[in-house]
Amino acid sequence: MVGLAAATVVVGAVLVTMGSSTTAASMSTRAPTSVTTSGQSAPTTTASAGAVARSAPMATVRAASATVGGVTETILVSGSGLPLYFYEPDTATTSRVTGELAALWPPLLANGPTARGAAGTLATVTTASGRQVTYNGHFLYTFAEDSPGIVTGQGVQNFFVATPTTPTITSATPSGTPPTPTPSVSVPGY
Image 1 (tube, rainbow, N blue to C red):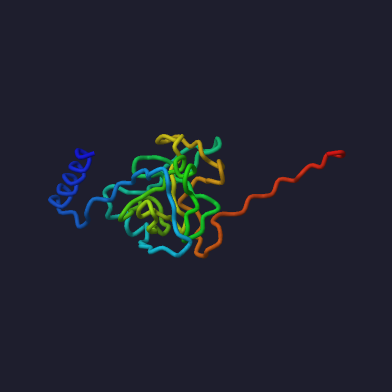
Image 2: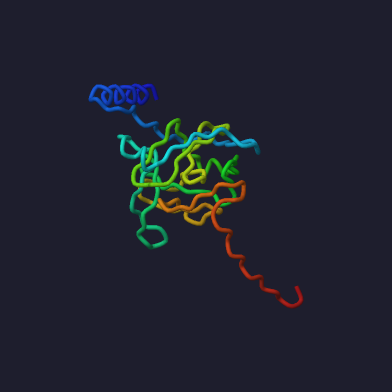
């Protein structure tokens, strides 16, 4: 961990020495197994992802091609290449991913998120785990079963792959589109 922190400082110093007008982008991290937020609005920091992308040498969020459900599409991935997801029951101000769910779906954390290939709005919302990254109002998560380039969490437990065209949510209503109800089947005598 110390070596990683030292490497980050060295990279930042090299960027400054090379005349870059920005500092090194924050690295995303996996959160502790418990994530909680209060039901109140949390402080947010917002930046246009398109504007940030041009000046950031290492993006926190970037667009990449991946196969999702047998179809190749452009999705959002973390700086380390892990697919990013949003959780449908979240609101624009509250992450509902806590406890064991957060152990499987760690939040994407960064102090100053940057993006490449995604023109939406990046922001951070302060949660108990730190500054969680949002894209167009959706909290972003990785999936413990994924690896760079491998998408296995699409549609699992109401998590869906985030894409550069993920629509913006701005209210306290749940994100995404509600799932279509499955018709129930009545069996006589039961």
